[in-house]
Each structure stands twice: as C-alpha cells, then as structure tokens.
Length: 141
Image (cartoon, rainbow, N blue to C red; front, side, top):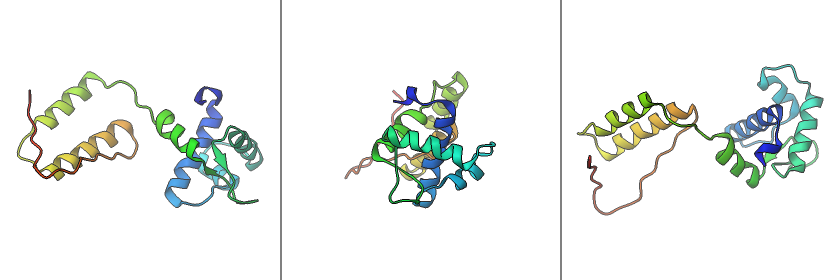
C-alpha cells in the first residue's frame, strides 16, 4: 500500500501520525499546513487526507474533527515509513564497541541501546527486555 502513496501523501500522513501521537487528538488540515513547512493550502491537504481515508489509513472521529490514523495506518507507519536502511560500517563498529563495554547494569545497557537505536533511526527508540527471575549475562562469543 505504501507504493500507492506519492511523496506529498507520505509527508502529510507522517505529519498526521506524529501529531496524533504527540497530542492524542484529531489533526486538522490547518494545523498540518502550519506544521509541514511547505506551501500547501488547507484545501489541498484535505484532498490528500480524503485520499488517505479512502485507502483506510485515516478516519474522522466525527464531522469537522480532523483525522486520526486507523490501526492499519499505524501499522503501515511503523512497518513502512520508519524503515531504516542498512547500517554503515562505522555504525556497526560503534555499536559493537558500546555493547562490548562491561561493568554496566542491565538498565544502563538497555538505556544505552535505546539511545543508539534512536540516534541511528532519528526516531523514538524503545528497547525492552523480557522479564526473568535470573539475571541476564552478556557474552562476547
């Protein structure tokens, strides 16, 4: 479905999802026209929003409310628009060096992994460890 979207639609969709995640509120075309930083009228944005709604990526909670992403839209956003490319060799060496450092507690290691993920993706990062009754051990094998 992502291939059906042109760059303008992707940009508007990304801004809607990001604004929705920040506020939890429907996002209107006037708000988007201010956020985008490009010269698009609210009417143009409404047309793109209508197209995104037809694709099942957005919905209007009620008339004149702006739009919110649907569950399908959120999945597309996470799986498609946030896709990160291959790591450079420098990034790999840096990650290996940081992971090899010892003497950290598990929370410190997870915090550092989250920071690395966020930095590499230029997006929010979240790292979770499974609950366990015994401590995790990290080996360099």
